[in-house]
Image 1 (cartoon, rainbow, N blue to C red):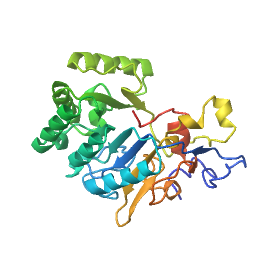
Image 2 (spheres, rainbow, N blue to C red; image 1 turned 180 degrees about the vertical axis):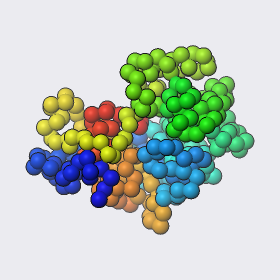
Image 3 (tube, rainbow, N blue to C red; image 1 turned 90 degrees about the vertical axis):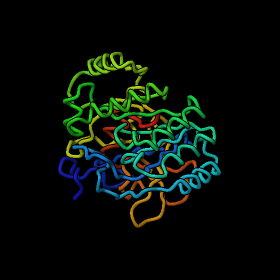
Length: 314
């Protein structure tokens, strides 16, 4: 039994129809604008509610090599995808020893780089700092570090990531600030505060720290909804697009895929950054074709993407 079965008995079973027999919503890949790369699930910390279960011991997604990422990007571009950005996530990407080479290859192609990082010790190692500085100078304005800062106050953040994590991330952010590297922040919605209050709290923090991040901009401060597989959520039908006044084009899987390497398996593409382990969202080992369809057959599709309106892309 899946974790979400208890709250959603009978739901998210048939990729074609919902529990009440309606046509399930699907999203068509219009073209990969952001190619995501999961550099591996190993992380320097173990968060209390990590959606991908990253930790210092979890290598369910093993390290990718720079040559593997480069070859995959070649294949995706050869399929005619309009890639403008490569997003790197983990785990903590800076733990992968070949990660700086991956960034350099993408930047040399004239593409943007978005790095999801906790800005802690792995990023602050001397070799990583030297490479970041070199790349920031060589490719000004092409690289953004999106730092995971779960709340604007240390107690909330540290309750999720461990004592002292907030202060350590701020140290990394100050270094990026002084280097002139563009930053964004990813926050969480677990505090229960109204969004306006949360954004105001971050704005005060950014001002106090001299960080050029616009807390009112949803792309600069991304506030992710909580992903509770035990919560009851509705299934998304084809009729929902009109009822919600939303378009499938606005859902993340219409314009992105994620490259992963599951332990013991070949490189593959996942439809969603949130669901790298779900067989129904495995898009195979070949570069995806434009027009490929994804059935919205998981609670995250509803709560996170369609109803929550969240997107990992910049």
